[in-house]
Amino acid sequence: MRTQIGIVGAGPAGLMLSLLLRRAGIHSIVLEDRSREYIENRVRAGLIEQWVHDLLIEIGAGERLLQQGLFHDGIYFSARGRLHHINFRALVGKGVTIYEQKEVVKDLAAKLIEEGGEIVFEVSDVSLDQVTTARPLIRFRHRGEARELVCDFIGGCDGFHGICRPGIPTEYLTVYERGYPFGWLGILSESPPPASELIYAHHEHGFALFSMRSPTLARLYLQCAPDEDLALWPDEKIWDELRTRLGGSCELPQGRIMLKGVTPMRSFVVEPMQYGRLFLAGDAAHIQPPTGAKGMNLAFADVVFLSRALGEFYRTGSTVALEGYSQTCLDRVWKAQRFSWYMTQLLHRFPHETAFDRRRQLTEIEYTAGSKAAATALAENYAGLPLD
Ligand code: FAS
Ligand code: PHB
Image 1 (cartoon, rainbow, N blue to C red):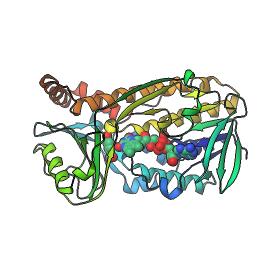
Image 2: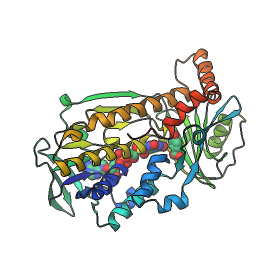
Image 3: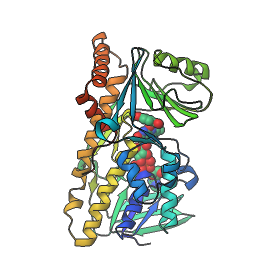
Image 4: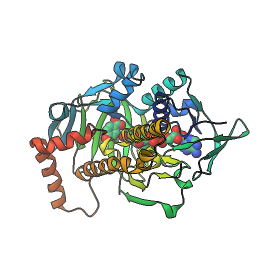
């Protein structure tokens, strides 16, 4: 098989990269080890930045987003029994949209297939070869047959647990990483969310997040141990704890819990994000705690930069943008890491913290909510920094 860009992974990064390349007249083939049904039903991120909302519409994959997306002007903080609203729209002229990742993946896959794009699902034994030459190869098996995809370049969009990053010699990479002493216990419930926009709650017992999927489907999270045993969390205990963590700042309707799970927390960046003709994008290169709602948005930013750089190469032969790909992405990645860490350290309880730390967190929340300058800084990061 032959293509210009071989893409490993049909998550948000891989699918968007293939669609953007088509718009630059560049051929690609996406190789995905799961089924289409699996990738279109994986529960993950829930929020997209303003520019991603605009991009999905621009590439013609925004029809269901416009029908089903929940457009928010800002978020709430809950602290000491009070709600504080941060109005992004008023501060920076942008909002955010609740439209969950699996719906985005459905829309991107449908658009790519509708346009005649190539996604090979359920591949196995994927490996890369010759990535430092002008003819990198992707080897894989499909329907019992050994296949070989000859490319000009490879998009490593296979997520944190994929094979692309591990295929780069470790002496070539610098890894920046930190763990967190907690995770999030997340539920999806048939109940109205407590407020019209997201609530990030600070409480003595720990952090809680009150998000949603629709006016009747709530997506709720509470800080827990990283290896929390879900068996210790019957439904009533979850509802009681979520209500406690709101601290009386608003009512919490409850309903049938349809989904329960624990999400681990990690900050991770690998530098550089490229090796020879292999370019990493999205979770294959970086991970951040979901407190800043950056994961999927950052994956899209990476592939916008990569598609522009590849477009320049095929148009002019210049490799300047390709050589600068990592730096261009990492400038944004590290701002997202900073913001995700900022939101996480602001709202969670940490072992060995002191009463001083708790009091400082509360002051930071109340100061930010009351200061136009501080709220604007938060708003521009949360709603999405300009791409250029
Ligand atoms: P993805 O992991 O989405 O996609 C990689 C694709 O590559 C997958 O389809 C995988 O099947 C495929 N693949 C892997 N190995 C392969 C191989 N060897 N061959 C072929 N294909 C292969 N972000 C937020 O902003 N907010 C959140 O609330 C949030 N919650 C999350 C919860 C969980 C449990 C997880 C794991 C992540 C969460 N994230 C969240 C982050 C998440 O949304 C990612 O940022 C986003 O999926 C990144 O997209 P991709 O880089 O495309 O990687
Ligand atoms: C979600 O709706 O799943 C969500 C929203 C914002 C976050 C994390 C998760 O920061």
